[in-house]
Image (cartoon, rainbow, N blue to C red; front, side, top):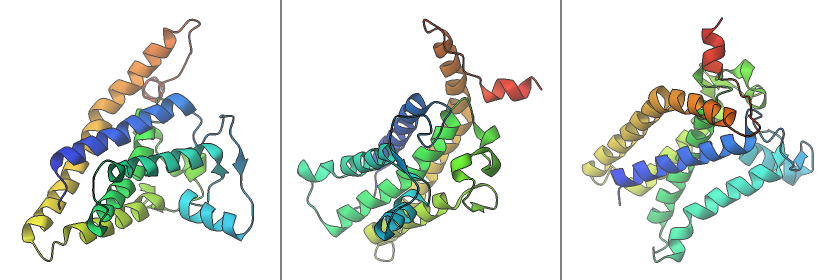
Length: 218
């Protein structure tokens, strides 16, 4: 069964809200740098395997372990509400999960006043600095997750069996790209400025710099 455009919109909003929530939790310190959570960089072979596969070689934290598990569990709640568990349904679920994860991570930068696109660079992001960036544009993790998502989409859509499924796949990816572009160019700048304003209205005020204003004043 192909994705519907409503599904694409709903799951994009899910990624957007997940990113906004993490901006509220982490502030400008990414990868749980200032959170009261445990953090490990070394361990046995099993630990290393989990670190490489699920954390991209970054420090393993209790916060991220809980967050990723919660996300994966939420994507599977449909099976406890009447959706039959089939390979096609599970393939669609995993395709959306691996599409949402890198989008959610990228939108954290888009919505965060400390970063925005202006600081979305390898040398500006400590926890992404050790990773290879594709053409210097984005971490290789995004590309890997995108390819995994595409593989699951192809498994669910079977475009070779029905040309309409192939058209739906292309249209769904195009809609996701449009939503990402609109969020990056329109919603992101507004949200970053609005967050700074709202924090300044706290009692006592919280002063947070907006990278857009800092760069514009140079």
